[in-house]
Image (tube, rainbow, N blue to C red):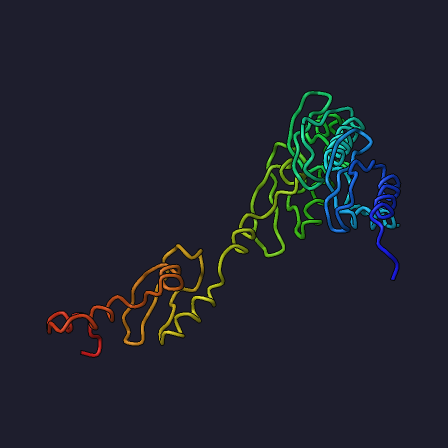
Length: 277
């Protein structure tokens, strides 16, 4: 078996680092999974595992585990600045947090708004300038078309037929048939059906009905409005009361009348709560 020579491993690591624009600063070999010190082309010092650096030097797909995090933020911020400059504006962010993060932008006319960088990279820009920058006739035709296209991409439709500006309200309908009015600018920003959002957050009524059946009773309500909103319930003895699903699912409570019957032997109290007499 060949003798392990730390100096040779260190030289190999230094070569791999150079191929990635890094300079190896460590003078000793700390093992393939050990942290070694490097300096990037901008002078930032970072710690990375040796096996990561060597693996990155052999990658062909461009993915890198050893990239300097400070450089990544600087390059990302430069990209945001470049995106804004293409439209003659500015990105007001001071830190890069990814393309799906909302940043504040400013157009050449001083309008400011917040939107994800990914939207800007796809060509989106100042909604106010878009409205003001077109002639009235062009706005009336093109504006309505944009609103309809945006509603269609969200799975719904814009029900109005004439365009009267981005600040005005338009009636729209989602894929589930919910209808509401929203500003044209809000629609172009991708704001959509609030009822659908709430419905997604609600626990289905069938979950509560199953919980009641497991206790030998019924959930008499037909719609769910969240675990904290009271629903109507009925136990196996016919008692009907109202309480929140949270009380039953989380706290384990059930029929208050049955609970009182179990605790008392007083005849008049039992007659009051005993449905069977």
